[in-house]
Length: 319
Image (cartoon, rainbow, N blue to C red; front, top):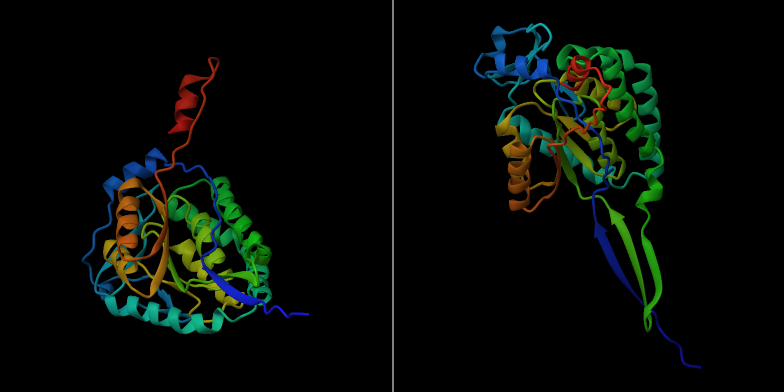
């Protein structure tokens, strides 16, 4: 009989896996007032200020060489807790270089091994929960109970990453046409970046980089300059969990850092959560430079007030 040679056509899906989560965000009025009163100003030299947070680049906690710093303020008291640097152009380039160098190795690391890092990571988050909670309470102004919820909701995403392999499977179709089978694979994009807001210092960074890196990407994360400490603790724990150097990098700063992340050609995708004005700008800049961008903007709570509610207590609870 006649032999039919089957030709294989390879369709590759380039994608970054992301968890779509609908969460409520609460903006405390006292925080808003303190933000307006103590809005961070850039300009002081680092040498004149103690307690400046490090960057994390290439698996190392490195002091910034920047001459500009921003105060991190306790919104409940107005006290300056510590400072964050405005990362320099060279430091941002170093973070990109580190992520690029790590990507060639990390993308070829087995899914099971990447997931095992997440298993250890979730254990460490549980173990050091109190440390994270303290940082959130000090810098964000949440109650202890609310800060614990912040950590737990982020932990749920890390738990999902422990079994993310099931969501990374490709597809096959035999006989898509005469003599043709099709195959699709999900592959990591490369370097991804996350820009996080102030209102959930642990949860939202944990929405971002654990999913991205478990899918084989490397990551550059910029936490809010108002609440950076929880992210630094999480980054330290990621290294402790076995994450190779350069897979996760953390930089600090304001709009100049955001502009760099949006425009750097090596960065393939950006995830942002925050306000409408910033989000619309980031989405426009990122997509203009050919990046994938997911931007979760301006979420608000909804509440129903029943006729028998105590007016004063309800208003206090809402704002």
